[in-house]
Image (tube, rainbow, N blue to C red):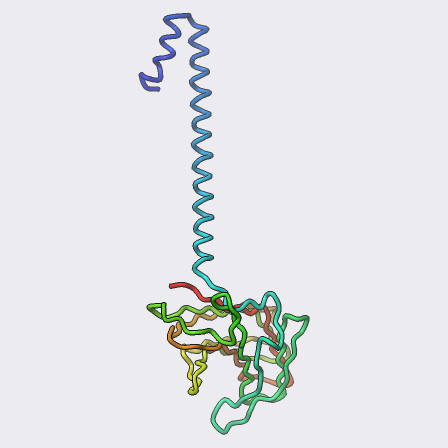
Length: 229
């Protein structure tokens, strides 16, 4: 205790004896403890506020372009078999949507690739058939694609690409790949792309390199997210 802390106690002793001194000491300690509790509570409130602000700022930096956790159906996609090389054999099979949220692609041959092109996005408060260009961005766009996948009957390779809507249909970001092994539980997949902001594009998933047929690959909870730089 500093000299200033002792001042009220010494005054009580001089003016009223031991009882007053004891009361002064008790009052001082009580007030000090209350002040410490108030300081601790204030620091906790500040910490909680900072955490909330960090979370809200992080959320503001992300834009959800597609959210398949709310449901996935055939109106959201274009699906068909294609060849992996020019003049090559096209992928064969069929697809269905299970429980309104699981895309099931069944393959009946091992060749080619089965294309799953997403054609419904939310951007700027509007529903769009592709992700429109954004010339306000100085650097590359940061696109995250995430989903859950499962293979049934054989191993499948899933490949993700961002494809220009232009006539050339060029890939505008480096492709990402993931092998999905047969018999495993749902596997989380995350891909990160850097895209040219001056181009409109689609997100496309390809099923290829199937180890055996007939077999299926399933996809659910597909989300496409743009992260602000």
